[in-house]
Image 1: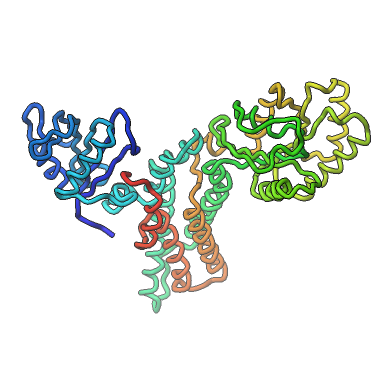
Image 2: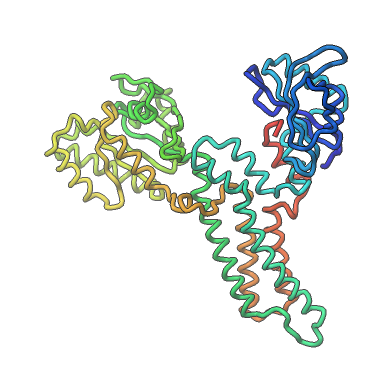
Length: 470
C-alpha cells in the first residue's frame, strides 16, 4: 500500500485556464524538481527553507517550458508529511502536459486517485475520517454540506470517537488485568464507574447515529417529488423554484413524460426537485411509462409536493374529490412529509380560499396546505420556509457533530450493539473474560472509523473515489 516513489499529478482541474498547479510529493521531490528548475535570482531550490516560493523557469535540458512559481514544503511539515513541491504554471494544457511528462521521465510516477491524501493518512497527518472529509469538502455544493465536511476535516467527529475509545480502552485494560489475578478474585475496574461510562458512550453513539438521518440528506440533497394530475402547474412550479425555464410548459395536458431533476440551495440546504409526469389514466404507452416513473420517484423522495389546480375547486363535488385524493396519498405514503399545494391561488377569491382551507384542514391535522401561484411566484417563499422546517437543522446551527458517511454510520451501529452487549453482561454478572470479548469488538469498530484498524481493501475502496491530484 505504501510507496517511497515520488508521485506527480495535476492538482487543479484539467483543461485550459489562467494557471495550473502541478504537485510532486516524495522523499526526493525537492531534488527532482531542482534538477529542472532555474531560479531567476540564481537560488538553489534544494537549499530553500520550507514554505518558501521561488520564481523561475522549468527547463528540459536547454529548452524553457514555462515561467513558474515553485512552492517548497519540507516533510514532516507538509500535507502528505513528505517533501512536496507545487509548480504554479500557465494554464495551457500543452504546458501542463509538457511539465508532467518531463518529471515522469525523470524520477516521478503518476499519482493514483487520492494518493496524496492516502500518504497524509499513512504518515499520521490526518486520521481516516478526516481523509474522507477531504473528499466531502471537494464535493460539497451548498453551505450545509460544506460546514459539516469542514467540521469533520478539522477533527470534530474523530476527536469525539477517540475520546470515547481512549476511556473504553482504559477500562478494558483494567478488566484484562483482572484476568491475570483471577485466582485472587480482585477488581481493578470500578463497576459503578464502568456502568456510568457505558451509559455515556451509549448516549453519544445514539446521538451520532440519529444525526445520520439529517447528515445523509444534507450531503446528498433532499429529494422532493412534485406530483399531481396533468396540467396543474408542476413544471411551472419547478421553473419558479429554480428561477429558470428548466421544464417545458404548455397548455397541453401530459407535456412532461419523463422526470426532470434539478437542485437548488435554500438557506444553505440542498434540495433536489423532481418534476414528474401527471398522474392520470392513459392509453399512451410513453406517458404510461412516465407515470410509472412518477411513483418510483415518490418512493425515493423524502418530501412530496402534491399540486392541485385551485381554480377548479368550484363546488363541494370538486372539494370532496380532492379530500379523497389527499387521503389516498397520505395513506399510500404514511412515512413521507407531504405538502399539499393549492396552485393558481391568484385566480381564487379570498372567500373561496378561506372555505377550501377550512374544509381541507378537517381532512388531517398532520398535512400542510399552502396556497401558491407557480406562475406569479405567490406563496413560493412560504413553500421554501416550510421545506426548511421539515429538516432538523438544530444540530447544524449548534455546530454539533453530524454523521454523513454510511461507513461511519455502520461502524457506529455495530459499536452500539457491542456496548449494549457489555451492559447486558454487566447486568447479568458476567465475568471479566466474557465482558472483555465484547469490549474488544466495540474498540475494533471505533478503530474502524478513525483508521486505527484498517485493511488494504478498505483503504483502496475509500481513496479510489478521490480525484487524482488530491
